[in-house]
Image (cartoon, rainbow, N blue to C red):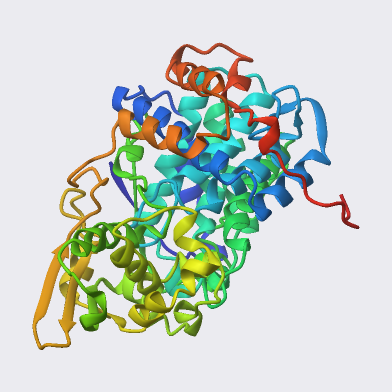
Length: 501
């Protein structure tokens, strides 16, 4: 790996392309690196994972809206929309929009946390959509996805967006553009311009994840990916981009991030070095913000130890800066304590999540979020007893450079009314690679079967699993098979509305 130093340069310095971060990203996207076998298997795992959560969210309102918008843009040789008959095709950027929304809606796919947050699986829907429209092969798709992950993971390691209240999709635009560059075997110059365009158009604020969180949380990554597809198309036509997008005098670093005095260090593979960043990422066993995963597992365990939850006086969760300030009481969002809050808000409230998991000894992607569940009297009472606080020990663990030591958990201190105290801590979720029950192919397939049960036929389930595990050997124009068709009885349409599309 190389360490790329990135900083602002005055226009008069005329920074050469080869010294710009966007160019260095484009170089690895257009190189001839060998493919790591373990990385390939993880690509297959993540395609299965994405399909699981996309199908499970099929009838949720944002997903229906996105799908109906996509269907207004049919294309004879286009891309597929998750859940529909494979003969139905739309423009690939709209398939990226619909499928990306479906994948993100339940907050249930993979994650990578470092200097910033990310869900690298958000790269996959757009890259598959373009691959279907352009008749690419399975190996083309694998290379594109590996690049998307490589770029996003390493940008997340080096550049913190959230401290400037910028949404993490600003790293997704460039990663999708780079992934499409690898998929389509584009020249370095074209990818360079595409990465810059994609970043320029995908910078937005974190208000989408603050306060009363709306359905835009699901739409945001899909929108960034759609814009990246369009950016690549423009650059394939010979168009350029604002440049240098990271280092320029009026660039993203200069006026959106830390300013002219800041130096960022971005790790990137050397040219022709295998891309393995996907192996550093981790998926979710539970449908909730990743930083709650370990604490859900801890709550399930504590459920067996506390006979009467009404005997609890107070619960303190000591955790990292990120967890405390994003999904904890440090966020100072009253909505995170509101029984009438949206699902999108509740899955970003560790107080709510911990209360439900502690009460039920379980977590469910639908049942744990119903209005009736959120407003249950005993739950609300328990919920109000929970506070979080940052502990430097957990913040340090969160940022550990060693993936094997990196932690996303915390310590829970339960004070009982009789004066006794119960305390327990957990470093990582059970499903994490370093956890008690790390996810492997078997677990990904089991998650898929659970989430698609009753939604797709057993025949369709087995067909998809058989085909995706043979991804490396799929020839050109065979990627339509990665689409999954839901049962007709399960399909819902949005009521006719006076819309634009």
